[in-house]
Length: 360
Image 1 (cartoon, rainbow, N blue to C red):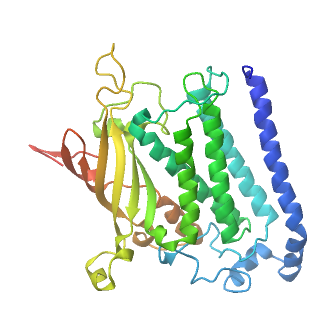
Image 2 (cartoon, one colour; image 1 turned 180 degrees about the horizontal axis):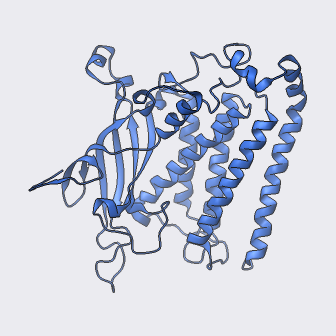
C-alpha cells in the first residue's frame, strides 16, 4: 500500500462521511411512511411525546425504564419507544452534532498522533504499553461512546433495544476506526490487544441491557492532571486522552443494591465502593540517556464513590439526563492506593493533603 498524502486522506474521510450520511438517509426514507402516519395521529409529535409518554402501547413503561433499580433518563425526558419511529428533525440535529464531534476528535488525534508518520498498514502488538492502563482506557472509551450514541438514537426515535444495539455497534466502529489509523503509523501499528479492549466496552454496555445485574457495575474515568497531585509528569507531547499518569479507570459497585435488605438501613443508597487502576511515571525518564518508564509502577486503588443519580437532586429533563451522564466521571473521594513501593490513604484521592507531619 502506497504512502497516503494528506489530500488523498481527506478525500477518503469525506467519502466515509458521505457513506454514513447515505445510510442514515436510507433509514429515514425506510421509516418515513410510518412516521408520517404517526404525524397524522399526533400532529405535533415532539410535543405530544410528553402527553403520551405513559401510553404502554407506544413507549416503554416507566417501571421498566430503569438502570440499577433506579429511574433512567433520556435527553428530552421522554420514554423510549417500544418500536423504532425515527424523528427526522431530531435525527438531523443530533447527527450534525455527532459529526462535528467526530471531526473535532479526528483533527485532535491527527495533530497529536498521526501527523507526519504515515506508512504502510501493519500490525504491532503493544501489550506492555503504559502498563496496560491504555487498555483500560480503550475499554472505557468504547463503553462511553456506545452510551452517548445510544442516547442520541433514543432521542431520534429508536427503540431502547435498537438504540442499545446500534449504539454498541457505532461505539465499536469508532474505536476500530481509531485503531485502524494507528495501523498506518510508522512508530506503532494496529494493536490486536488494543482492539480486544475496544470491543470489551461496547460488549459490556450491550450486556447490561440483557443482564440487569451487570448494571450494578458502572465504569468510570477520573482525570486529574498529574501537576496538581505532585506525581511525575509525562515528558513527551501528550493529550488528555493518553495522559495515563493523570488518569485512573474505575469500576464502581452499587453496594446498596446487592446487599441483603436487612442491611440496607445501615448503608447510604448513594454510596458506592469503587475499584480503580492506573499507573505513575509513564514516559518519564529518570536518566535522560536511559529508556523511558524507569520509574513507572502500577496503582491499584479501592475507595468510596458517589452515585450522582441518587445524590444530586432531581430537576428538569435535561438536568436529570446530565447527572446520569456525569455519573460516568469519578470524583475525588477517600481511597487507599496500593503500589509496589508503598500503600497510601488519601482523603480525596488522587490529591495528597499535607498537615504538618501527616499526609493523607
